[in-house]
Image 1 (cartoon, one colour):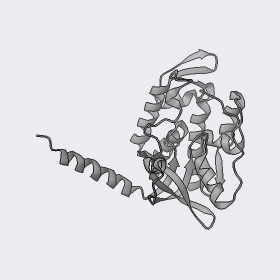
Image 2 (cartoon, helix red, strand yellow):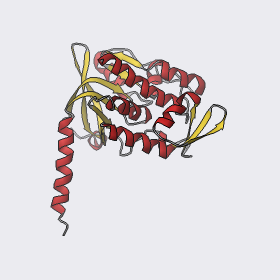
Image 3 (cartoon, rainbow, N blue to C red):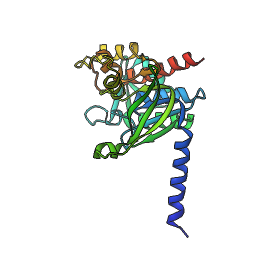
Length: 251
């Protein structure tokens, strides 16, 4: 016998317990694209309480779509070891260029992040930051459908020692900080130049305001680097670098 009320009770109880556990987190990541997922994995495997909020139903950001819905991705030689680390199958297309399935890469990194202990919540938008004495110390969240419907529903707050903006091209968290603090941080993303974009996305991954870090395409949006299309090595490397920076700061 299957009772619908038991199914409902199981889902509601478990979800609310998970949400209650993360009300105070070590690191909150906004955006479950490739860089956000990689950062969540490397932070969680160090034993940190990591919470990742993704505004969309699906995870992976632009990676599942590959290039123009051809669901393949390319990474350069420097990022090949990360594909291997996540046990993502790849092959060398030409010297220094490695091909992998966009779907396999998304699924593999997501699985490893969850298994490492990261708590991932989809359909939730980071709509604002908690800032006290000029330091970021948490995020403000709401359901994405509430935001999109324009409903006047008050949000909830999650405390965090560190926040990572991994929201991609819009750099939404940094943008919100600008609008609330009169800080001028965003330079805006430049036009396509894959070689420079891949280099700058890693070089400029860093803290941009006390306790607020950027990784992934948010980096190039903040620092004015160019976009680089469906090559994802820089995204993966940026996610690992931001995790390393926070781990070094803690320890």
